[in-house]
Amino acid sequence: MSALSRVYRNVAKTKALAILSGALISTLERMKHPAFRVAMLIAPILLAVIGPFRSDIYDFWQALLLWAVIIWFATVVGMLNRALVDELLPKAAFVNRSAISSIVFGFYLTPIMNWVALNLGWMREPELYPGDFQVFLTASFASFSVGIVRFYLFHAEDSAGAVGAVQAKPAIFDRIAATEFNQIIRMTVDDHYVEIATDVGKERILMRFADAVREMGEGNGILTHRSHWVNPTAVTGCRKDGAKLYLLMRDGAEVPVSKTYRSRVEDAGLLDG
Image 1 (cartoon, rainbow, N blue to C red):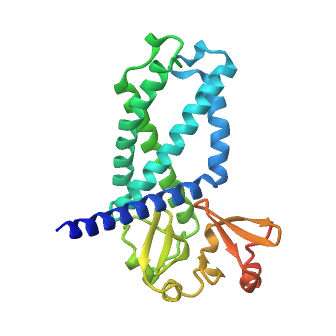
Image 2: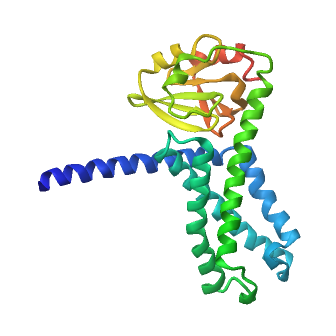
Image 3: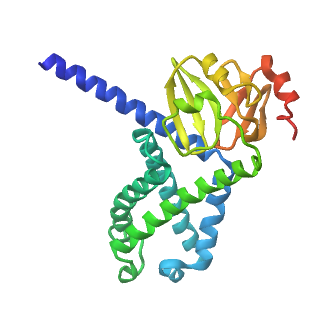
């Protein structure tokens, strides 16, 4: 019995590590997106100027530091939290995952904010600190709003490029657990699995990469490497690192371009600019 228990514990530990690893990778990829970097620079400045939640009692530089720490910490933790929910509930609808992620985010951010503001003395006038319930509602609503905006921005871009076009979906769409997605952004070999990134998240499917590419159909994408496939409409730019070349994807990932496939990528016009 003890041996069986050890097996179950090892399996559970391996699965937990795989989920955490997938969530960390997804979070790091999203942090590479240019929009994330711009938002992280602009948001603290705007809040330092506006002075919400009585942060106007601080001078500009103190308020800027305060909001930078709060926003950067809350955003990174929130992204990791959302990635974990996506890994744990891949079959749930996007809106449901957003709601669950936002509520969980509010629950653990509230005591952290309370401890930092009151116990560490970051709040110059503690009596001005909003109640925990207000902090919870604000954090949950902000997290949910970001998720919904991201969802509809992706879908708006997809719809704009497909007006009047009625096409059969590639066969691989039927293998994906998520039901509310419009586009496969990229596919990557992951051991015996294929990692598929869509406009609403990522999941791993046990199949051969060659079969995944075949099921996508001709004309829907391009190989950039023997282990990477991309949707050209989801490419936002390219980056060179010495002799190495990468395509920048809408989900924040950087996909390598090998010498073997570079001519195909160039012919597809993905290296312009």
